[in-house]
Amino acid sequence: MSQNRRRANLLLMTAAAIWGFAFVAQRVGMEHLQPLTFNAARFLIGTLVLLPLLPLSGRRAAGEPVAGPRETLRAALLTGLVLFTAATLQQYGIVSTTAGKAGFITSLYVVFVPVLGLFFGQRVSRFAWAGVGLAAVGLYLLSAKGPLSIAPGDGLVLLCAMFWAVHVQMVGAYVQRVPALRLAVGQFAVAAVLSTVAAALFDTFSWTAVRAVTVPVLYAGIFSIGVAFTLQVAGQKHARPTHAAIILSFESVWAAVGGGLLLGEVLGMRELAGCVLILGGVVVAQGGPQAAPPAPGAPAA
Figure (cartoon, rainbow, N blue to C red):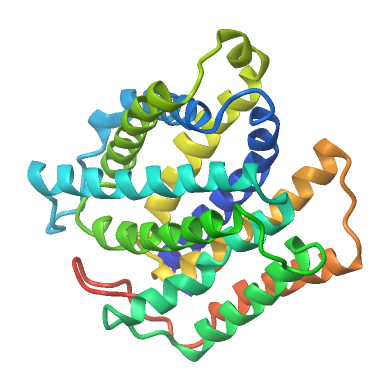
């Protein structure tokens, strides 16, 4: 395994860990804030945290293509729109379905990413497909509680998973030309503006509610948005979308760990077996030929 690939795996696994613990912050925050307001706050915080670092984002290796202002703006607008849509669907879906089902359905993006890639002519190795299968079964054992009957929010969460898959594919394509930090800040700013406008139109704002969840909102904004999504963008520069999705699906394992440490939730044998299968999926997906990172603008899976 190349050094770049090991570094990408580490960045993506770190992002997954941060997102996993963010489920705890999100769950607590939703007890006081409405969905759009919660998203507006965390995206705004994430944007502000990274803005001071933006002047450092233009440095690229010699001969490496750099996107112009127009392409960078287009990338930020499109990824930001998809990010806003996925986050909004997730927040509303969580309100009207169980947390376990929401976690499982959301994580189905690990399946949707390679399927979506097929429509763009991407080739997915048998090792990657095996990893996807193991991760999907593991996610079911870890997250699904009882029979998967259809709840009102299930459709919203399923759409959310599809948009997360689109987001992973888009980031994988754009980050080959757009500096990672610029892409991260740009998409956060777009999502923050859209969430703020939507919250002003549809949510009831309360400073009392915001103060009640200051710590969860700060964690979600600084770490889940500002740090983890930036690590995702940087990691996907040297990781194909399907491999990235499998590693990022490990967030469900970290969510279970966070629930146990912070909320007193206990993992049974079923959940532990799910964790083992997800880890197995991550390991299996790293097998096979060590393909080079895709060329800028080229499809990759």
